[in-house]
Length: 143
Image (cartoon, rainbow, N blue to C red; front, top):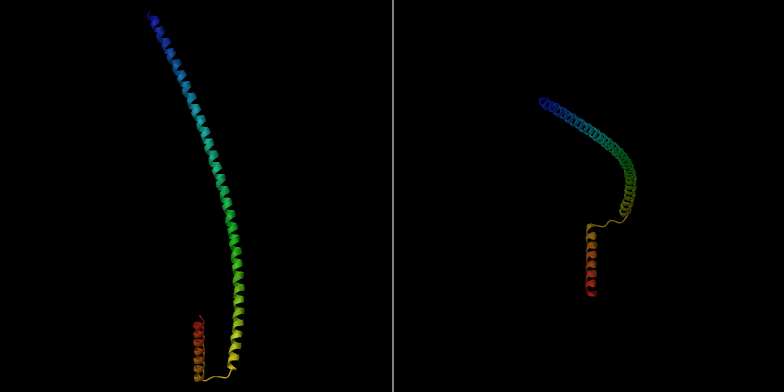
């Protein structure tokens, strides 16, 4: 009977060892699954980072292209403005020279007119004022 009790305890011990080995196997299996999941997540993260980097490079390339296009358009606009400034300046100088000639001709023409005394000019201006008054009266009468 003592031996049988001892035997039971050996069987119980063996059962406990078997249960511990089974638990240990389950733990190793769990750890292996976790490691595999970790590797999958790491790979997904690395792919995501790589994709983000490719998108960033693509956006930088697009931005560089747009910047160069804008710079080219700005240069063209500056060139056009400079040409416009040059032609406008030449046109203005030409007009001013033409106006100067016209003014000089008018001054020369006026200097050939007989000169009036100050009294005569005042008298002439008085006549002009009187005529303007007559015109205003006629307009009022007509209205």
